[in-house]
Image (cartoon, rainbow, N blue to C red; front, top):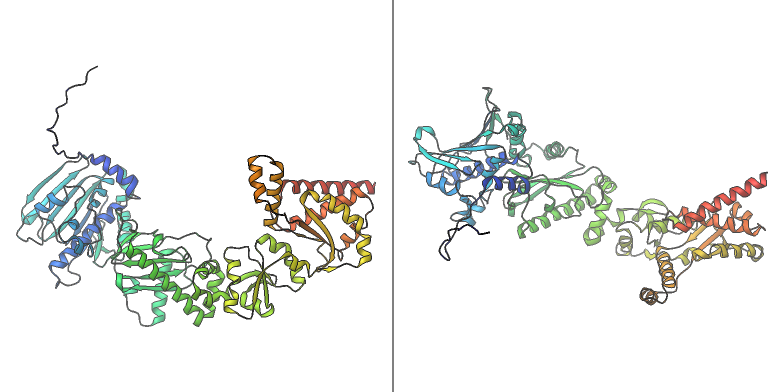
Length: 615
């Protein structure tokens, strides 16, 4: 098989890329833009940039002299602006060359500060909904230039021709799309109006919409941003901002925090969520750049711990990504994130100092967020640690309230440990805090920094058992045989058995066992099973003296007093297993398979014994 001759270019000759426009549009629709609806945003954005350039040429013109007009009647979509317009040379340079933008021409660094877009591919988004784009423009920078028409088609071809000035009497640009049949949901008059309000409600230039029914154009952005308006009183301003937040986010804010960073031209509000949210769930924030909506899911503008607010902001100096649907991570964004975080801290400080009712409602809903912040922020720690709620042996309480009655505060290392000891510790007068939740143990240990008169220590099982009263010698001797049988029955769980008296009397037994102790016993068991192998050697090197669990029986409990007097060995063993299983379940820790089996077996054995006795 021979290959056909292919003409070759001279060695080293330059070649030009051949661009498949349909393939490029498909790439944009699937990987750059989130939805075809962005076509209208891109057209409005180009119009805003054109108006910005026109304002440079005529800075003395009235504020409302230049605007944007949208038209959609179901058959066409049209966007017209009074911007700087294009000459024929501009059309060849900026519309017919993919990837080139007027913002990337001369003085790019200066112009980036004034324009929203930077990539020059926005017009291609129109091919997501139409097969042809028609542009009619006349330059304001070169008044004597004729009007120019450009038609671009989805197959990659285009035509350019000049027209008499009468074709476009005033400078500016009109872009007209004839939608495809499958794009109706994005180009209907109602949808175009909705999208225009969605993307352009905060634009600083007047924008109107005409649905072709003959009525006057409806204003898309009739009022400036709520934070840019004047109000008769601070209360009126606060209510207006809260109402705007409710309209945008769909909830009534617990409070609104004004955001103002003059260095980057950022203004907006943060709305405090009225209800708690799961830890780590980050809500997206609405970010506008120069009035144009950039993203509704911009997580990156606030730190992770600030998941108790949702923001809507408008900024001048933040840099959009290529899709203009998120923010470019750079030093400016990092500085904005830090500055906004400081505003949130300042709001918390103000609430702590001057509005205890607001603070209480905030902490009730968002104590986890504040705890995560307090771990790393000493100022917040000093202000709010005494007011944060914790689970304690006195119920849910603030540390300030808890420390008034407990000068020594004990902290458990896990939730299950707290549940094992809470009732007994409370009856013994011990002050124990559940340190098993995220941040809690670390924060409670820092309480002496705020309350020097309080001491904090981890709960040691020996501390609790020291508060359990021993039984008298005669009772101990009478129960010796039962205790021996119980220890033998529970040896498989490395569990010792002891008899004590403690409150409440309704608790028959207390299982003292920690997660660390169980892990150590499991490791020791594996080492014994793997003895002689490499894995066994590794586990053996890690082996420590495995601490035993301890089942403490309560002599004050009537059931226990009956159990220790049993003289039938098998029944005694079964009762001990049942008491162990009940104590293990009360601890609410995950049960091992052997423990689940023991609980089932002891229940059925006791049931069988009771039935035999009755018969």
